[in-house]
Picture 1: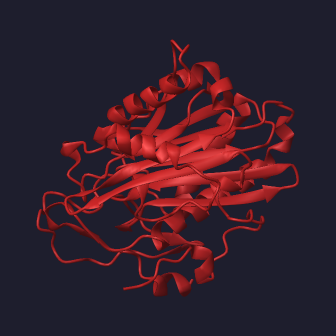
Picture 2: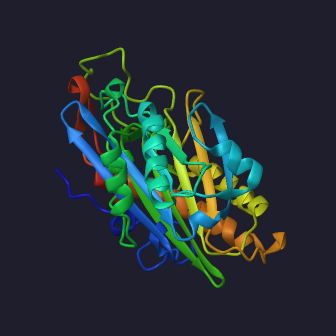
Length: 328
């Protein structure tokens, strides 16, 4: 057994820009995160809620689709209007609709005059380690994640929407990171669940073969199974510029070894808490770099903070050995 540790604590420094105080999405002022975890034998799933201040008045936002084999509820209205008007929630694939409905209930309870709301909920498939057909997420799980949202360092690894996820041949989960610029902060949270060969600072670390699973029809790695990336900032970017930032977030998956498999739904949603829209495009080099560095580190954190997990039908996903990371 090994103690979960963030990749920076293992001696791996990603990029050159400085992280924020927590090195997390919650370094962005006004952004909170709450999570609910279900880990009981055959069930390994949960909810992760990203709750920005001011969402009810609409915040500039954009979505980038690397591969559309997934479900991001509410994305078409974000594309059309360039705003989010709710928190962003993440969960397992078959629970995404229950989570969206529970989020809607939570929002309506807080706004008795609302007649139209666009809940934004993303997912990845945790069906290898969790009995996904049971759809165990209840409104109470969703509301608990929302109500507990705080500006603390979010838990990483096998928590919330990352409880049952795997990436790059290893157990993965939730990861977060941030970078600071003179003009503001970029923060990222990921739900990692995709295929490829783990790559740390350019060096591949292939997963070693493991004993046959009790259900050989369900491979550990499969054809992808998706990644959700949430990018938050307080920079004064408009929706079009946030779309450019979101695309760089998806690109950054390649830096850790994603093969962008055909069965993978890879999405990024970027939003800002700043409505001034004062940037011009030639100023985007810094935000682009901050985004790619943050995503790369958050994805690595999702792996090094995860623990070996045995779940549905006795299937096991193994944590990446930290000694392999320390050697990079």
